[in-house]
Length: 121
Image 1: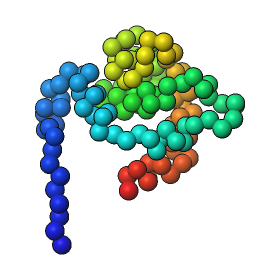
Image 2: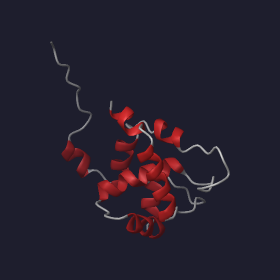
Image 3: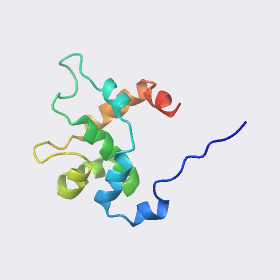
């Protein structure tokens, strides 16, 4: 049986040497978050506000890991204080920064579905 190796677009060191905006763009454009967005679609008027920018929330949770931000509270604070970070994550100037509770609801939806296992498969 032959194994097929996929070539690299860039090395890990090249990725780390990029500016944050370029680094996030390079990482985010290679991700398919559509399965995650399907589980966030609203079917009722209860729960999270409909005005939340779910793609930007998912990207900001990934950026939290890349930046080494330990808690969601610190992520929310960074999103409120750092305009460039907020724009890099996909939020616009008109989007409000989601609360910790909004991130918590999103994480709970992701955990209760099996979408991550399907995406990993």
